[in-house]
Length: 252
Image (tube, rainbow, N blue to C red):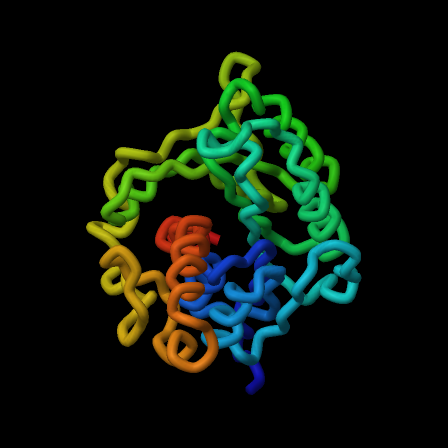
């Protein structure tokens, strides 16, 4: 229809079980692709978004075919090298694949996520380099430190969110890069987005009394119970809090 606005087009990298995709859906956006190499996670992604293009390997993919076709690109590259639960060796090679995808897709916005450890002292140089690489592509960048509890979730979990766009400038204070800490502020969702924590909605399998967003139909028809339980825990543990992504997305 003439004059009708098209939907914002969103693509996700390192998609997991779809935290970013779910936030985009809450915003009314179109999920045009997700990229994930884990078979269990792809079962979840393809169940909820069957019309979305499924890319199973970020390495060697021709991302240039998506140029001008993606408005917002999101991704939370593997965190184990920065997490206190990992070996903290830094220099995750898949981060370079993320940058290569951004370089070729050229989205209007990028929203990236990792653990709080990525901006801690041992990896501050790596964080600074990532921001500089994005700026070298013509983006202006800001990093935020947000506690999931500030968005109404019943958990204290701090994540780092890096937003790159064509407007706005990275904040500095006395010549040093500043990372605004939005944790503990008045809740962006005003006590949470109603229904968001479960939509990770019923009916669904339950793990540790939490809704992990995986449907019973898959549990029953395709994956043995023991494997389902272990992989659900793993996938849920690696998932981003979609409420925080929604808080960022709705400001775009």
